Amino acid sequence: MDARANGGAVSLRSIVRRAFRLGILAALAMATIGPLVLLAVWSGSHEWFFPALLPQHWGMGGWEWLRSGGGRIEEAIWNSTLIGLADGMIGCAVAFPIGRAIARLNGWRRYVAAAAVFSPVVAPPISLGIGVQYLMLKVALAGNVAGVLLAHLVPTVGYLTLYFMSVFAAFDSRIEDEARTLGANRMQVALRVTLPMLRRQIAEAIAIGFLISWAQYALTLTVGEGVVHTLPIEVFSYMRSGNGSFAAAAALVMILPPLAAIAATRYAARNTAVSPL
Image (cartoon, rainbow, N blue to C red; front, top):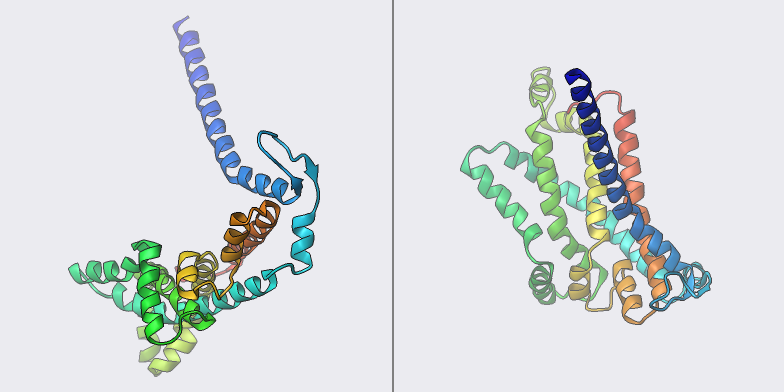
């Protein structure tokens, strides 16, 4: 009798745990998918006023407007893509040696260097934007694409330096030492050993840098001075002007590059036969 009761209690507890896990997974799925569904419905609405749960009139005005290149959307997408790709590649080139140098430090020096690199990342975006804007005004780069690109590099280099710190913390430099003992010089080691071994990590860093720049709003607004139009700037502009369907469609377009980057990273990780890390 006791064995049956214990078995029933264990079975009940397992059912409760399973139901709890399923509930957590369902809540996470709703939190992830729910906003996307809301944006999709909003982008396909013509009129949607409170307290109606669904749009009173449906239409594809937002998507038609985007397809026809309405407003400054084409310029915004082009600027965001150009600045993001440049920031990803330049940020990777700058953060690669810095991250490696910090990874070689020990003790308090490593912590101080990491804190210095990460300080622009944790700084309030508006405060950082005002400081960077003052610098760009001094060098006559405020209000143009080059100034915004350089401004985006500040948080991008911070993030990517921390990324490469973790990469080189696990990197086996004895492979490079062995190449030198076989007669390779410093440049040959970098081009034929280090970079090929870290090609997947470098590609991931470029993708991360692109995404960091792609989503910047405060820095673009302050340094760009309203002249440089990027996709985040346009989304907020549509929201302020009351064009909800346009804003929803543009916001869904903003989501595509992060999804593509995540999918590409997962595909590369799954199809990499040999990884040094």
